[in-house]
Image (cartoon, rainbow, N blue to C red; front, side, top):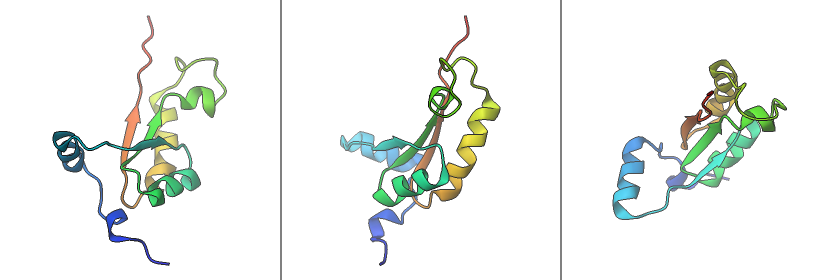
Length: 97
């Protein structure tokens, strides 16, 4: 079974800008592991998101405040390895007050 050509082109920030300027939707799903990220990539999503929600979903924290950049990078690595066409996006939004 061969991949269709539309899924083999690497999605870059240039692609995101073009989609935005044309009013086309940008698709994104969260994946924290190789297998899930590979499935997301093969589905044709534009981007794979690894966000600080991994603190609650994967690490079992009560909230996202304890998530470190090291945690984010540890989860980003396997997801990045799986991606052939989808862009990668890391997001850390919690702010300690």
